[in-house]
Image (cartoon, rainbow, N blue to C red; front, side, top):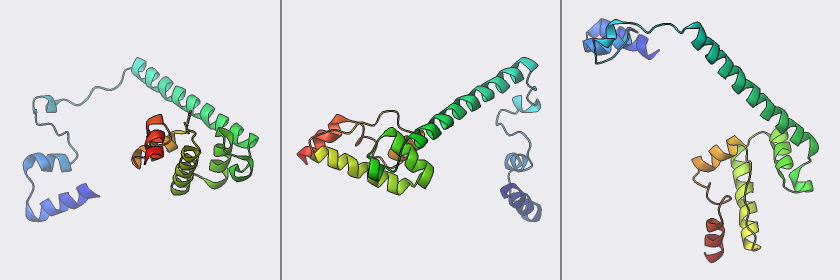
Length: 155
């Protein structure tokens, strides 16, 4: 949509530089015009085969992880009644979805309780969405390091 708008603006008012016009028109854009004269070569059959096999391998690995997570969820119950475990976390995800705010607040509350009780909470084999959430909120150090537990106890 952006290209269409820019192309129409340029048609009406002739405002774009030639290199920008070339980009908007969908041609290759590269300041090195010598390499700009040739299009890319198509993949060879061997390259296609490697690409297809890599994609299939990634899909198989993802599906195994999905199947394992479902099995974990089926073995567990609601963590509020059965206690927290990797299985109960999967149960919660399968029944409530990855409610990021709630998951993060419950995790930080569990960390705070463990720390105040003199214990430390270390998450092992946590799901990728939780890793992303912890890093995005800059709270990844809390449930994963002993340094954070000592800091919480001191402060």
